[in-house]
Length: 112
Image (cartoon, rainbow, N blue to C red):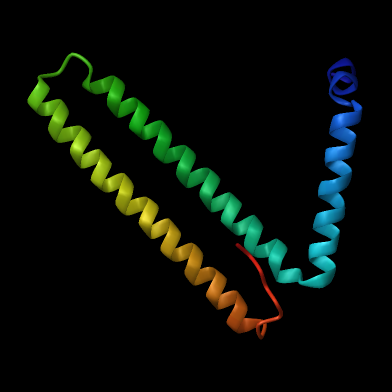
């Protein structure tokens, strides 16, 4: 484990980590809600998008060898549902951003 950590610990990772920590510290000091909103977006995006991708991959593998008409119906339905989920994720992300800006009085939040 120590060898693995030592291999990971190189100048590139140290610089990246230092810059990231500085940016996070700067964000927290200038506007604490930014960190909360960004973490919330990242967590929701990561788990929802990863889950969606995994389900689509499993569905595509499941439809291999099935009749062509069934494949077309399933893939079309999957595409429509995926677009709907992504649109809802975008909508709720925008709503969370607007809510945060309203609650904290437009403190110059540039969340995009």
